[in-house]
Length: 209
Ligand SMILES: Nc1ncnc2c1ncn2[C@@H]1O[C@H](COP(=O)(O)OP(=O)(O)OP(=O)(O)O)[C@@H](O)[C@H]1O
Ligand SMILES: Nc1ccn([C@H]2C[C@H](O)[C@@H](COP(=O)(O)O)O2)c(=O)n1
Ligand SMILES: [Mg+2]
Image (cartoon, rainbow, N blue to C red; front, top):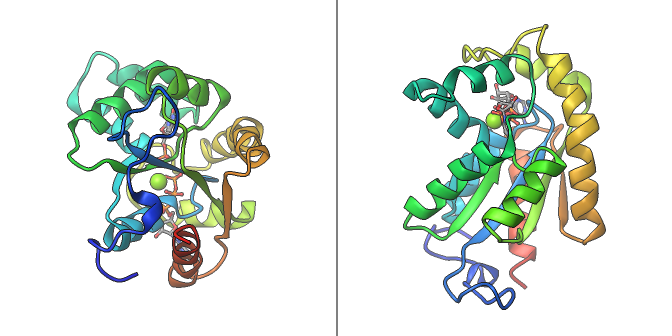
């Protein structure tokens, strides 16, 4: 799969159920622990497969930066490693999807908990095509985050354990949910960026058959 115009067949818009029209969006959720490489790999997926990348955390950060009325509350949740109320995050995702001319989205860092998942289902009404899951040991996650150096308010020894706790207690059950529906595509993320992307590519290519 080389050019971004060379889309695999599963990306062709289709009618998933009676509530979805022919031009319904295609959604892939991207999950994994904090620092597992979701954002890094999403950039590469965009380049190779022509998706639009929507980072839930990035959209929330943009709300903070814009000085919106919810900004201070969102920043507090982020500092404490907590999940922002789903209605806010889902509305931001929905707006970004509606404003995009693309209909193929990788949604990174979402759904982080059961409330996120239910809100997306109720408000947006689209089931993910599949869920890409980056699996990585906890100690590697911590090292990567502490080395990230991007000035994030949550990349510190106070917040990292809280983020990991939320991941294990709230996000893994969401992954289990999709796993029980046969929708999870797991990738070993404890390898180099290029090796991880080889795994990602093979998943996209396999799903075209
Ligand atoms: N395969 C890899 N090997 C080593 N370092 C990596 C790898 N993938 C990403 N990194 C680095 O690890 C850090 C975290 O990566 P990234 O920001 O992509 O993770 P993330 O899953 O989006 O994290 P978060 O959930 O906190 O947003 C970055 O500094 C990135 O450059
Ligand atoms: N579905 C989401 C995604 C993110 N957040 C908040 C809490 C996270 O710690 C922070 C950063 O997200 P990341 O960039 O690590 O994906 O944003 C949330 O509340 N709900
Ligand atoms: Mg990220």
